Length: 304
Image (cartoon, rainbow, N blue to C red; front, side):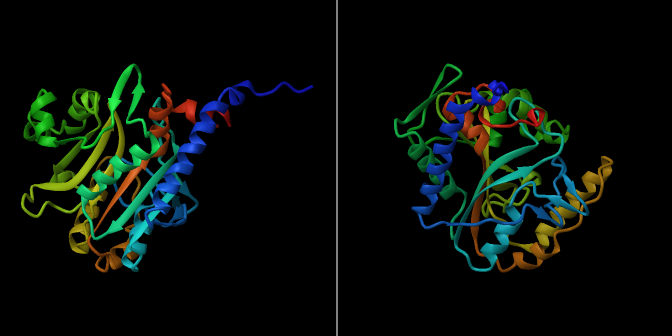
């Protein structure tokens, strides 16, 4: 008689919890008139990003995020969209990272990053109606409003360098990762907001403070959970950022990426909007109290 696979069997409780979390997320957005969509996982090219590498599939790529396709739907007139899908990023593996993972993305026309912060607070309140969660011995109070902290304030409060010094010395990621992130979202979730304009990615600049972008990342118990923007809709500025990112990729010896021309052509038609990518696996870790990401997925790469 064949012996059962105990590694898979012992995950049953967490996989059942995961299923209920995903079902609740879906109900949350459907109940707010968001249209659930499915966009292709295999695409001609992703948005060029210096520190994110896509997995090649023949002469195309697996998507690192559904962002570009979902924005093209926004540009075509769909006002509110959400998607739960698999994404792939090369060379990402650790206690909080998998090369294949589940992303929740949602986009809404006519709003900005402040609206997304309120939607994050509402989503967690729906998933955890008790108003708190306990993770690694910490109790996190989910009662809104959550902490809003600018990147500049975070460097002043927790960093060994000022924000400007960190940028000038090319140490921004190092200071964020090792000095600031572990201290965010302790006791209450933190929105780390208003990134410097040179790190805007696909976010628009703040209209009154153009040296910062309308971008935030959400942290709970020191874990980065989501990345959000008021979306940039200027195709000229977006193309310039893509060119700069692609140049950085090639300077580090990475293979060239094709430019997402159809997205850039349609971006001009996209209305004012905001969008967010939230890591479902990490959310499940937080809610179920899992120590590692391996505990809340059925199969890790090593089990295949």
